[in-house]
Image (cartoon, rainbow, N blue to C red; front, side, top):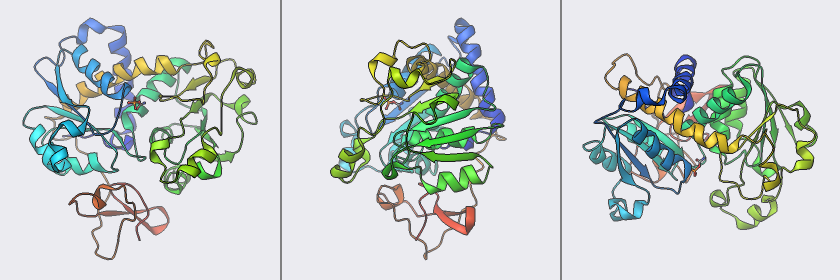
Length: 358
Ligand code: CP
């Protein structure tokens, strides 16, 4: 059985296969209309969502399957103190596959410790969002025709932006990827992505402080919202909330075929005047999310009975001398044993949230 918790749980070949399958689904919708007949998807959303939850629901319906779940954990027995592991054990009695979004980092990985059905991480805190990554890969493929030799500018909240972390991981496996990081000091990309992903895979990256100085060399501009809900300090949020705004004037400096992506929702970082620009791909990106989730559900259900399909994961280190300092990690919020892996530079990182261990 295979779970999707991190983009690298799928090999490059499996990733390409899912993107290709999504394109076949787009071209042959009727062929897949009963592909998951009799199967049930549970959507367990402990954190708000519009696109991810509804696209999962719509995807399963288009595959001929059914959907159950909750969009507000307070309406479930979570409000009585039920843990993620117990909830997943229970829901696994009712559903064939589970998509989980959680504000606590590592919660979907903890779910895999006990689950008898495939778990899909639909976004865990600031950590990862692998199905948004599949959406982004399909969108780039459809907009530009290829995933190799692209220069991608990531702009805005690169610190808390889980979609950014996951997409950089995925793009690091394609030939000739170059990354430009456009963020204020407070919202810079976490070191573990720079070192364990970019440096390790030989990905060229540089950090700049304005959109204007780089937009002309980008193939993809990946805009993100500054996420108020992730800040512990409101004053810090106020200092950076309006840091980068994409408008028609800046778009005039970009390549004619650059694609603007955004995982959405947006607040003020892309002005409405950009929406009519043919290079604004963010609403097409939303629809791609449904097709790629159809492909993912279809494949994970197929692989559920294939013993050769397993998550490889890291070599796990359990040590009483190591502590995860992340207050938003599952190992500091529920009765989940802390586990670590040895990362780049001999550093131990939490298995659940990738924070450097103390
Ligand atoms: N892109 C994305 O994850 O959107 P939602 O938060 O609306 O699901």
